[in-house]
Image (cartoon, rainbow, N blue to C red; front, top):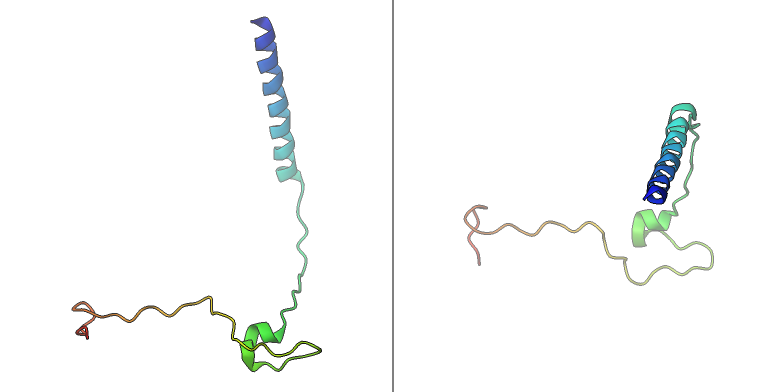
Length: 83
């Protein structure tokens, strides 16, 4: 049993050292903010309406939109009778 207790105490001590190191990093290290510039091609922003540049042909199919329009409301709550 003494060996198990020594193992548990050693593991707790090591966990305490790791916790103390993380706390010291949070308390003492100050991150430096910097400007980040990310270039986004115009064809991704405008979709198919942007002209193709370089050797890449214009896409034949418009990419699917991530934003779907809400379904049309029908029924008595919407004040519209279903067809």
